[in-house]
Amino acid sequence: MTNEASSSDKTPSFEMTWGSSTSSGYCSEEESDSEFEQYFTARTSFFPKARKANVNANVKKDEQIEWGKQELTTADIQQKVKEYNAQINSNLFMNMNKDGSYTGFIKVQFKLARPVSVPPPKKGGNDAGGKRAGGVKRRTSFYLPKDASKHLHISSRTSAREVIEALLKKFTVVDNPGKFALFERSERHDQVYVRKVSDDERPLRLRLSAGPNEKVLSFVLKENETGEVNWHAFSMPELKNFLRILQREEEEHVKQIVQRYALARTKMREALAGSTPG
Image (cartoon, helix red, strand yellow):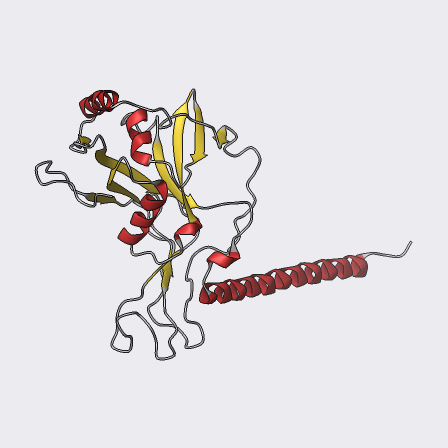
């Protein structure tokens, strides 16, 4: 993977673009002694709420797209790179290498529904590894700003898994990379198609084959949804945190149910008291 563009290209190796929305919540640097990792968010539930069936009805998932699967000769790649560079109106060009590979930029948009964890700010009480006296690592968890995006300068040999790891590293996210997946998004015939990119696919090849138009192809980083939550991918402090969140949610639901029945009982008694026999 190439982390920096050559100086002759005069192009930045990475470019970070933040959306106008701010994070929905940030974690304080220090909390109670018993809770080494806390989420402070505006969201009410760890589990995603059920979506209505008619929402995003025209979004097709796992649409098979043949971009990047075709074998191209060196001459074909050179021609495609030339055509690609002629279509872009920025300095994010692709460049051929002598060995037949090529380098270029991809833009990845973040669409994360859950918070990510980063190392806490270093303080006098912590060592360089961000550990407390008890040997437990502390983390700061927060939601990334909505629609945050990042440009990565990569090679045609860079895999999707390596792209995910590089993105997490640039944002200093310490979560397990297995929690995340790269998706390709395309708009065709007034419909949106989303497909999960396999770990061994090469995103820059997909970018070259599709061209620079982001409506034809764009990349999105999301949670690696597999139908069930992979609890083994979470650390012990995270699991304990989730249990605390679930307990608070359960207590809140029980409270709401008790209040609802108490209100219904009161109204029934009022109705009985105001009614006349017969």
